[in-house]
Length: 257
Image 1: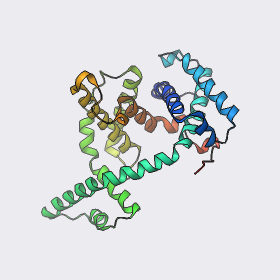
Image 2: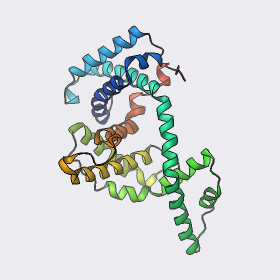
Image 3: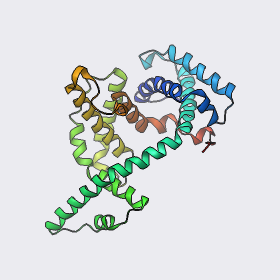
Image 4: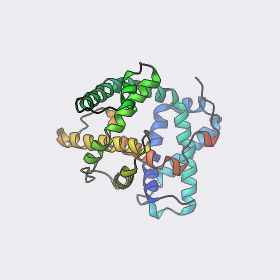
């Protein structure tokens, strides 16, 4: 199986990140939430550590057979991490919607009022704004606001520089910019990968600007919004399907609630 060059750069970024996640979570938690035995998880972990130690900087120097092994390791370990953090991710999603909802409602209302003042009517937007505060409608409000911000964010992405990024980060970001610009004219009506990549690239642009203005180049925002984390998010959105990074495909279905 051959993978794109962008996916190769993403994998070389992802491996050390996964190891940090595993070390932060602890092997005990990984074992508890997986279908593997303690011996199997421990063996997989040390195999992953060994693979990471000999990784070259240039993905082109990795033999095809080695890529097969690396991809297997990444799929298994990313699934184990995903299973161990399922509950946290769900809570984070709910928190994000709650925090973004007031802004989304205000943004849509302002746009609706502007359209009415111009004698225009958007029945779909009106219906969304009249909806209640159910989780379903709250999510729809957020998604609608995100879609309508799409064009504005694309313009800012065009100014995103990569001079302060690593080689792997640069390749992933440039691939993402090309992806956005090639798809924006035929953008889907529903929220999807395109919108996610656009928002992540716009966030990256903001973080890079803030870091360039802060003392010593230190992060001026939350520690969750590091350049590395954002680029990993971009890579995940672009290459997750290509790399087969799906929990269900590995049969690791059991999660202790």
